[in-house]
Image (cartoon, rainbow, N blue to C red; front, side, top):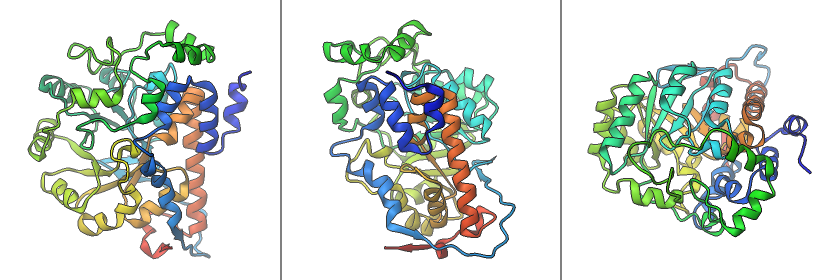
Length: 388
């Protein structure tokens, strides 16, 4: 028996609730692609656990009847200090895919980010979505493909490009190896049983709009007509020779707000400033690349000490609660972003699920700001934090 979609979503009060509902709705290979990470998945767990090593110290009697949850990120004012980080293959999780996430982000007045491996085109998002838009660029060996995506973002009037810099080869995602996950899904005896046990997902995938990767069409067949794992795609198609000169070339060709996604060290944060980046996303790719790496939250303070005020700092990964967002901003982040915080919700209930997830976070941020005794996010500082 399936959960009633409406009542199931209405009972989802946090990310774990959405995760449980997504697990019931998705075939095993699809669920574990969202849920899994590299090697022993230590960094994946640490990304969230890191927030528990730090305590908030509130002030009281501050007069917090009216609060302002807005921040400015890459030239755009956002109503929330958190946005939907770019993630690939969204129409595998729900038949509306990026369309659902973009409409939810639009409703909440925050950034929507689309991946190079997105399943809806740059042009459609540019034409139909008014909320601030970011494109996540993978630097391909096929330079014509890379530069075509940059030009398409210009024509579609995107607000920012984020170049992912931590994926020059595929991470060892062992759950994908065990389940046989590929894009597009490959039917094997084992996966066929899992798909058959999720008839709603299976009928939506096979009988609705054909699965596409429109950013890649005309350049590659892998992932579209040829099934391939994401790890294999990164290793085969992305350019391991990418360097700082290449990043600067992307910035120059783009000419607008430019972000580097996957910065973890002070040295790299300084180089990002040097090449004229607007922002950095402190990120370990949700623990899906280098297992054993530091959590983004743990790196905020030292990076903010080195480049704070020179570049915007986005904490990407591990966000599950409004308190996590307040801790990250207190440590020196400009804003936060994440994928799991909305992907489970997308799988559980499409646009309505993502709206519920963002609404939960908004309510938590508003309540937690009042309990912290602040009316604006720029009133938060390390004075509010104590580390265990």
